[in-house]
Image (cartoon, rainbow, N blue to C red; front, side, top):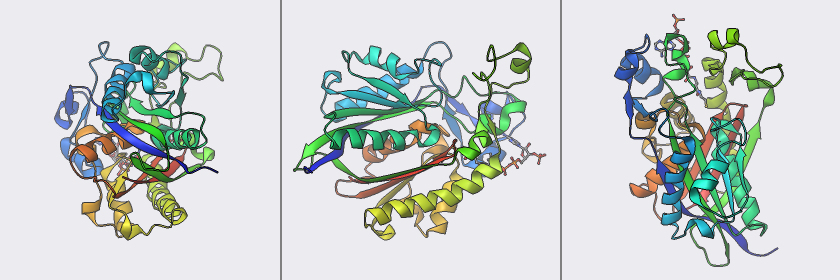
Length: 336
Ligand code: COA
């Protein structure tokens, strides 16, 4: 075995300009700023201008910023792994449209589907590809346009108020010997498919001829369905579990972690997790108040903001933990 390790050498994020406040949503559905803030901590989120901005546009801006941060150009990367649950097209997904926009020659690209854990799943894949020498540099992107796929009406309010649009990206590079950036120390992933239907979009569905009917469309079957309390309960159990498993595997104590980045599904989930592990609130960085739940994009967006706001300094330990549809849960530890 060589001493080849994988490092994060650049981060970037991008959100659409259009701010949608809780107050704005009250004009579309029966809800209130108080209900949304109390249950989720969200004050506002970003939505694309429909028809004007695509998922690949968001991913492009975030990717360019991550590449610039790494001191690289699009021609320097060997592979793109893009995590999303809101693909630009059913197939080929989103990564191919990003591939075209970035102008990267004929390197491989792929969409990875692990919902809100998609970034950490992709990061483990990039880490493995880089450490085994398959590729030297992998661009990992999390990108979501939720606003065009939620029901912005009272019928869909339980889900619609929670989600926002955004993208985040990191560059993962190999180093032999001397550290090059922020070293990926450990990533642990899990899934439990028996709960797949607790948070999912049922239609269009390839089990059925035609995949969709007018009746299903009218019934709102194309919108996400979620058993909120069931998801909440599992999230607050699985997140501490996988975080401790990851730290244990890396022989790192909880108190030695400098910054915790939790998936941004609900501020209450994150407060619950931090409290159960006795993590001081000042060690947790959140941005859900401003962006809502951006699924696969949430953690790379946090990474990009935390570094730019000086919350994450060189040499510090950052732990990232997520839970999402599938169910999936995952955690990663990086020496920044
Ligand atoms: N505005 C106002 N009222 C709303 C509402 C909204 N946007 N959405 C739902 N309600 C109503 C419900 O209809 C219900 O009314 P009822 O009591 O008259 O039936 C009431 O509020 C309570 O709904 P409930 O779903 O029980 O609320 P909750 O306390 O469980 O909170 C969530 C809802 C979604 C905030 C919470 O369950 C949650 O965060 N779950 C996890 C979500 C998550 O993490 N998802 C993504 C994972 S990646």
